[in-house]
Image (cartoon, rainbow, N blue to C red; front, side, top):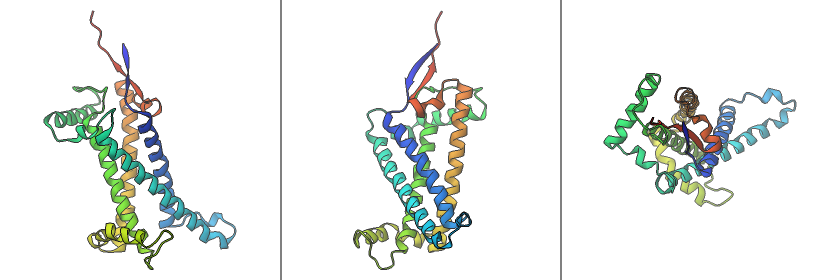
Length: 232
């Protein structure tokens, strides 16, 4: 016997799919910016500069979407009326035990399952927190490179914008040894995020197969099904 369990609100599902869309766009355009790979598909050489310009534009707006959604998710970590995620990443004895139980469940192929899978577990909470920390790092390194291109100290919305970015990101260049180091870390972090995405998809499919609770449907309908033991 199974009971229907709510696992994601409408807002969180919208944020999830905005993240998916934004990461796909940011990766495609970012790879092009680093190494233009489809200019030869365009027959008119004079249009090449516009291809780069549009890629930079889409990359910038995809990154902004990720940043805005991350801020909203950070707020919901503490203020959500449905589920306060920060409670699951605190290093309490209960959370630490649950984290390792979920990990053992994974590596033993579900032969050991000593936790309640009907709610957000500490393993997934920490895993998603890592993603948002990676996105924050991408924000800092990306804005560092962006503001270096505003050499005049001016922008379409005023000088306050470049000044604010310099104040927030100049330390990144100092830490990583200048523009080349920042660019390398920005590119490397992209591959780390893609590895994160690959494991995330794999793990959701894995849980759906081994737990048989419909976990993969959570991001579509917001619900999963928890098996209920019936007493005879």
